Image 1: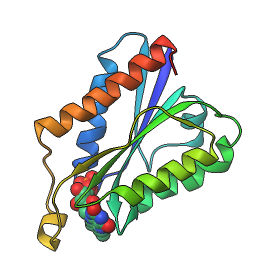
Image 2: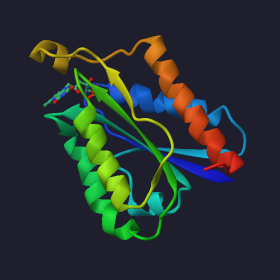
Image 3: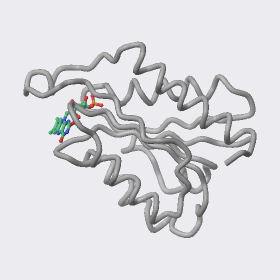
Image 4: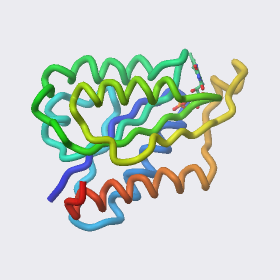
Length: 163
Ligand SMILES: Cc1cc2nc3c(=O)[nH]c(=O)nc-3n(C[C@H](O)[C@H](O)[C@H](O)COP(=O)(O)O)c2cc1C
């Protein structure tokens, strides 16, 4: 059975909802095992033992979150040249932008020689004041559906061996 690893970090809950929705979508398919890991818990072995990846992070200060970067820092050389060609996609939860966090993940994935199989998915929470940024996030159904669809497509593609 093929395994999809979803690694995410969240501060105010938005990215967690995205990751959980994507996991639900992937689990809706057959012949796919989904491993949902917080960035702080994810280990290089998780990366090595997966067949495909979904990376999900907030954009903080124009970058992926520090905890997500820590996951890549801890995993990068342990996995280098051992996961070439495997498929991946990314999801960003952003207050207004998200593009640079996406670029950063794509750059790391390029170093890993991963194969990007879906456009980066950015959910904008319109959090642009300190109050809104620090408030817990509740994502709308349409955004969650996009995440579920991405998870489902990744899971199905992996299970069918189309990537
Ligand atoms: C320290 C900090 C910096 C942030 N910087 C950005 C930013 O550069 N661009 C952006 O679009 N959103 C920025 N945000 C907003 C978050 O991306 C937004 O609140 C998002 O919903 C957080 O996701 P989470 O709920 O998974 O933590 C920032 C939030 C924090 C706490």
